[in-house]
Image (cartoon, rainbow, N blue to C red; front, side, top):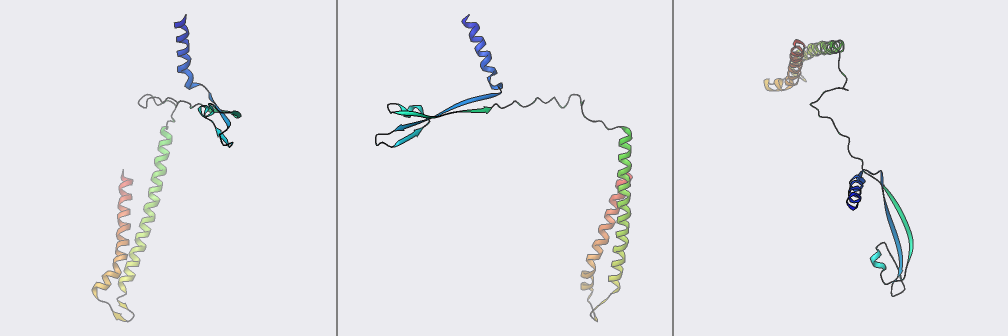
Length: 164
């Protein structure tokens, strides 16, 4: 019979962390020291041999920590996840292609504008009535050449993406 009770006690003790809440009692004691000054303590050992009165008894309820939910193995079935239909995938690809074509048209327009700006700056060979040296002209034009190169590279990348 004792073994049976011990087994039941062990079963309850292992299930204790799953309990919904845990209570903790805090007692505050007021003791008078030898000089007549009050001493407040929550340690029962400090009250030994002194005249002490119980001032407060608080019961704190602390919620138990809930165990984390079990996660199914990711390599198992993917049930419960939304699946994309063939029609949805096709419309998504069409939207993506439309966006890329609009970006391509925009980049082509920016390239034309950048080339026009470069041509305008190249046609100006003087600065305030003086002729500039070749290196100063190249330095002034470099920014516009870089802009043309950038738009050409963007157009090439968009065309590669559309070819896929």
